[in-house]
Length: 219
Image 1 (spheres, rainbow, N blue to C red):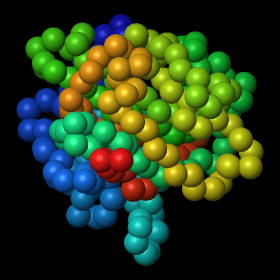
Image 2 (cartoon, rainbow, N blue to C red):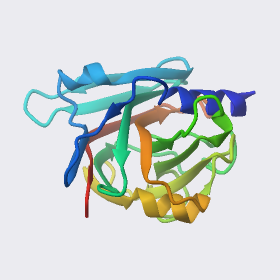
Image 3 (cartoon, rainbow, N blue to C red):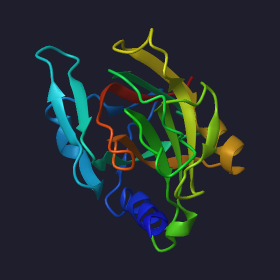
Image 4 (cartoon, rainbow, N blue to C red):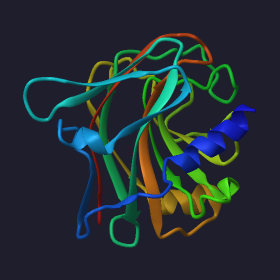
């Protein structure tokens, strides 16, 4: 049942009304200003993770806190990967749960994740694919595995545990077009949505994640 729900919700991220990212060498997705927040929506899997802006000076931070909840905070936006394939973001976590096994359903919880969605046809949700870049609990950096609930989503450990990095901002960069080729064997030319998610519905262990500056670039 949860597998079907995941497919439907991933597709709903990008139903009618998807905006077009700015063209050129840079496409801003999440600057997380008060004005931009109107372009973001929440979609619940279980309950509601708290997503709110914090800070008094630019750049503001999107703080996500979960307590036995799981909901995605997403933006429906089309990004041309032939022009801007490189995804950049900054994130921070206060802690992870190293006892969780991410390849299992009970361990499919993350203090922070950023994911991109490809949904070519809303009428055929099984065609939807997603790559999830996660701050892993126990998997090593660079590891990848199918989501425990659906093989339509691939999990990639962009960051993992690392006590020295906890509580610190870390910048990440991924070539999304190359990742879809690698993990799905698909040479896609665009994606249709971007989401962040801090979830703890499977293990029940609370987590907090922080996000800033999500954008695409040419290189």
